[in-house]
Figure 1 (tube, one colour):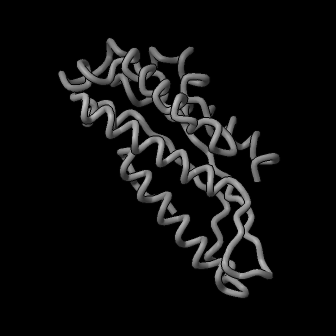
Figure 2: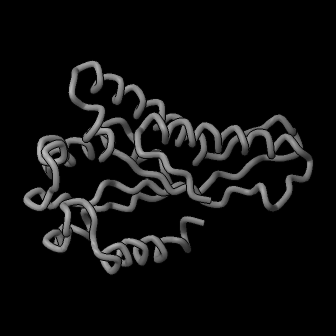
Length: 180
């Protein structure tokens, strides 16, 4: 099930909702198979940089949110005790995707050219990394690893043709045998 969460605060809210649903499910003796969460795929940074990074207060708020997100993800990806003493929930495979490489010269719009350049995304990747997010998940799908060599194909500076995303999907699929 896809949930749109463009900002770090949105991602945090969705992760907390998943965590609550898992805790509630695990309180049941026999949870329904349909309530099972097998995989959580999250990422962030681009929209925060574009819309919520203008002031020192915005930046501090983002750092705090990312730190809280790191804590929540650590909880989800580690084995948890629950309220049912006869059962123990398994960790949830969690993938973090870092922002893909930005093709700065191709960015459309003054806002993006001012706030979403590749140098800005490098700063965001670093902010998330320093908060520990990369170590709090099961797998990191590194956006630049499969887009850096094809950045000229980013037609609007942000988005890529489908075959570039296919490379990212293939990397993820190759990792499934040890993630799940």
